Length: 290
Image (cartoon, rainbow, N blue to C red):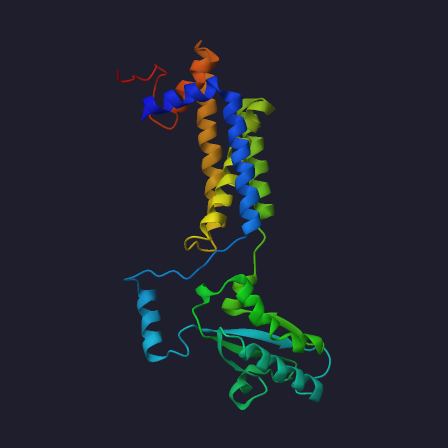
């Protein structure tokens, strides 16, 4: 493997501008195409032999109506009560609107005898209990928005509507950009202190960011041909930044070591790419089979 990496690195060094151009074109193309197609993650995964899978099968067999779980669509008014005539009519229409969606098995209104427990004592807060007809993992974000939109009559009447449970999780995207920026900023400071120059600090960061953009684009594309869980982009971001920066750091560090030992720049880069990450105590040229 070392010989292969050495040869590939030598080729990349000799054709550096072509290689950089190809990487940029491929990355931009992947990002553009993936954004046009959109994200299509799906949590409809099965893990045969696990306790959770056995529990799901037991529910499907004994309690099919409850196997897919329920999600609350919360209703709240700041003035008056949900039981007021206008609000009650809007809630009834909302319950019917949600119930007629094809992916919904049943809806229990907080104003019905069956849903009385879902109405607060002061009658200002309650929730529609929505039972799904399909596993939550099979629903796309658009499917969930369609279900939630069924409660629009309540919104039109001035009732605050919020969604929780599995439906709420599906449409809620926690913001992770700030934590990623903090991580990149911290890495930049550490790399700048380690290398002593801004240019050397930028190499691992740019390498990781470009690789991550391409990886996230590929994940989006894969979501259209196979099952990709919603957590995949988040995991890819965490692992991609960490591994991308670490291994670029290994290569740059070993390259600097080769320069200090008197190697030519091209040779130092090739050896660094071939030996980084391994327990190599010297920078002797890797042997190549004849």
